[in-house]
Length: 391
Image (cartoon, rainbow, N blue to C red):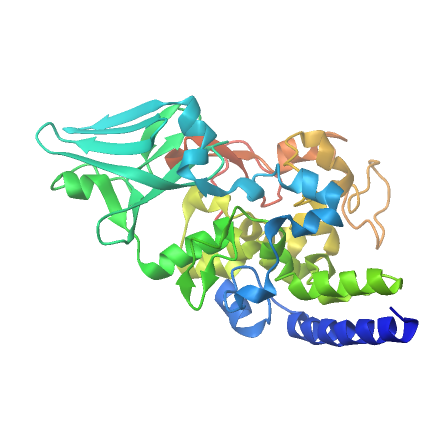
């Protein structure tokens, strides 16, 4: 292949890449927005579902150039946020789990033929094969299945790791159901089904419909970086032509977002400030919406890049649960010597109590009853003993 032909080929792909870059470019936001507002305004945003199938590449395509990131990202909670139920390690480990309330008995039984969900009141027994498992089970795992009508139903019960057993799915408790049908499940509206799969899987929606056949289980590269076909083509063309990397501009990079947008970007699935406010979720249940809690912090008022989700958490790495691991982030804003004068670069005062393990005090654990587990509160504050949970 001649050099002129190679250059022409690169120019073709560069043109395509630039067009895709313009499509993905996001104007800086000056205030927090709801996810619906972002989806209507941004060419690309997590859960946006109007891209043709041929704009996506097979899941493993990213590994050839990004092997290190690929190797670690696939082990994260996000990468395993949903799976076909026959791949659920939890249900294979706990082959029979149950729960009873009143006259109703719930059970999930797993064997070589799959996982069966059984509900009985002693007179009537209903059994369905589970289809999808949502959640990695570090705290819990919920289940979807289909009935004869082909629609999705949510099991009334979920598995909870602290209990090593089933209990009511959060927000789905029903202590006095009329019959076994009502006790068993909740039918999921199509819009909610699409939202669930959009946050727990990759490329789930096509032509406005859930595409179970072609979606990728879990949150993988293209869920956050956008469809990768243009990027992959531009990189291949550059390699063939022997020129420098020209493909980076053809893929969306959330790392380049301004702070307010960056937190809202993660909030598309984890709950932005306005998502939670508009949904009127109050009390300890909203501690699970980390972007909302972070954006409620006093130190968030100026939207500093040192205080975004990715400032503490690399989405390509497994979650670090050691308090000391986050001290360097806290000390990027706070001085660490009592009596020292704050500066423009370090406006935060020194803590008079300790110089390490900052999050253990200032981001306390909050017990969420319906989850049977503690969650780290991302509303950074001076948490006083016996203080009411601040909404």
